[in-house]
Length: 334
Image 1 (spheres, helix red, strand yellow):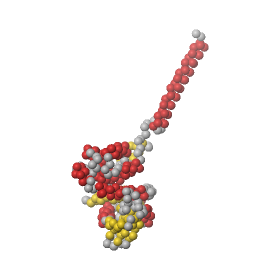
Image 2: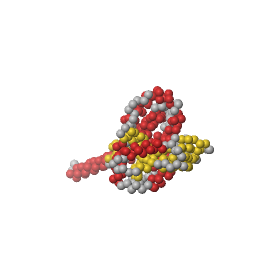
Image 3: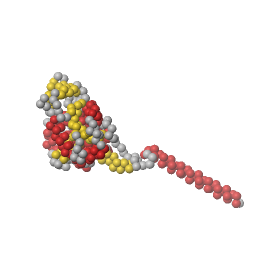
Image 4: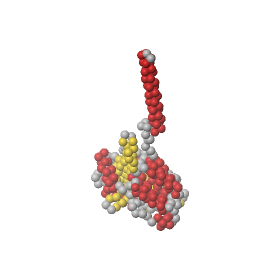
């Protein structure tokens, strides 16, 4: 075989090798592209992401006397959710934990929905308690007497209904406060604060340049969580009367409760003393107010909250706000 033939054969073999190499490379690139389309640009499975809005939906979906299957679904959701606080590194989630307000919600759910529920076995109740403790829920260290709590639950059904309405009222106010710009308004929902040996729960606290606002929520005249026309009359002697459908009903005055909450919060915020503005927010936005007595706090409908906050002008500086938030954070248990 002459030299030219050998040259042609070698060249042909080389070309075939290049074609084969190119084909294999193209297949590999196509495979990687399919992975990226399925799992994201890195070719890895993306972080599972569950919105905090789903936690809020579950919070109000789980009702007293729910069935074990619903409780199981809620626990499964919590384990997939892992909390609303997210820490990322280069876009990848590296840590998740439950927010303080979420821990407070879980504690309330445990004592008002899980513990007294006769439809949930004790083993399942213990599973809830241990899981809640594992994610940092405070105050569940002592195992409840589930049997006696379940026996009493039938007697407390009306109290549970009122609690559910109260939770709905707090949620209405929480949604309104969520409209505030988080860059300028620091909102804490359901905070449990402790100073020395005194512990109190606060529905909402707002810290901003305009001032410090301590907001207590009342769900007067909410029916099944829905607003309705009614009147709140505050008479001399601190007598509170709710009038609905022509009927009068006396309700407990929150004055002493608000007074004690304010006193504790003043002791907690010591690094930067600033006036605290207590506000009673009525979550029923269709209720009218007839106030015949002066109070040391404002009584407003929830839809007027942002206007009340904007009406103050304490002119707190950025350094003031930082110190105030630190003081509250040190006292917060949930």
